[in-house]
Image 1 (cartoon, one colour):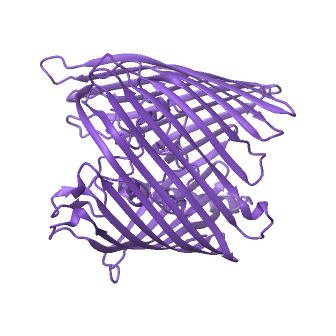
Image 2 (spheres, one colour):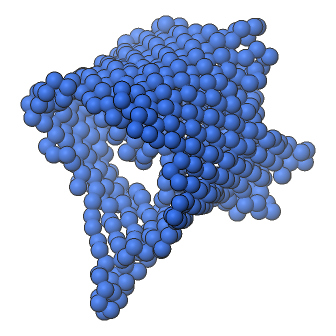
Image 3 (cartoon, one colour):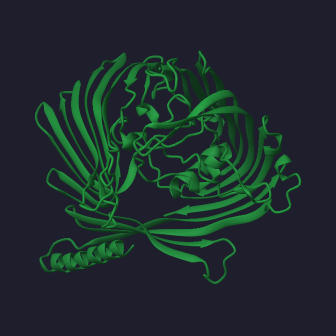
Length: 573
């Protein structure tokens, strides 16, 4: 906090000095602008069902929410120096006269361009390839209904999830230059993910670089390096080193009738972790690889795109910035987190993923963290999930298709090495959905959108440790503009899971320490209805009512219902 304040003060000082100097020299003065967001968010929630039977201590009702205001200050002396800082004021609902207000800098960044170089210092967003630096989302919600999208957007804003990049503190530098028939680009960054205590813990730095070149309109090649390493000090207990290096090539061929794109990426990782303070050596090191090939063909006439992919990710492939999960599945939800006479932690369900901002993660994990199998068992750590090989095929609408968006995909994956047994898991995934802008299709003159989508996954393994687990998540919704700028919203989302699996727990060396059997038989439904008033493209007010039903067939006492009324106002400027 103090460092950010010092940086902001320095930026303001430089800006004012630069402005005065520019005016004395007859140059353009410093430009200053403001933008931001304000939000009021109030919920009234109730918990009922079997889980409350005989319970006299658990809080089963509550009103919560907050008011917040984010003010972004933007300074621009010239193209070589700019600064942006977002200042947040937040007040929890029910606090009077500012008694529970909080004030903080939410984001700070210095940036600029000097000839062909662009730099950023402070809170920088980093995204490379799905196997190097990539913040993936493990749930399929491409065709999610609008009423759920609105709630998810709030959660993503509060957790600063934009696309698939990681927001980290550090600096990065970009270089790009186009020549007559080819171009070259370079990118480098360095951040600190862990700070030293000057005794037993070292600074841990995340650094990386990418170099790429394009030749005409058809060929692109690139190479990427990412390192997550400790800056060792003499008194440190541990020493951690992890390196990832990849290369990729992309071929594009475009014609009036079709567009072909073929992309290949391959690389390797090196992991080394030592307990340097131990009398007995407790170090571990290993290396592994990955290969990934994707080909897509878009037919411009019918507006359909076909994609075929083949992937092979080694058992020990380790890339923390691509494998860190966005959601912390074993974290206690903020809403009704304690049940059974306030003595048992409630496990997060699908509703919590939209509703609980605390389940989301902003730190890079250097080991594979636990996950809930019913959400995504095939690739819980994204495309870079280790110990997987297989193929995928997708048929989808192209961007040229008007008022219709659809996708159907099938994945088949298999383990390379069995966990706890020689037998291998097989994973089959079917996913897809469609969105129809019916109002535009029939010339209604107002919005009438319908969407439906889902993902079905089956996991199987034969042998002594047999596995049979199936899970399905599905979503449907309607958005109808009843009068100008007033929308009725309806949505239903469900998750059904049934079968058995084995969950692995990993130690500090990222090795499997224990394997525990699981039995799963549950279903969850979320029915939502609401009204949205769009005062302008930047301002809206909405009222949502959610009814959540969770049934645990194996433990009937763990079944419950959650009802929630949500009022939200959002204004941007």
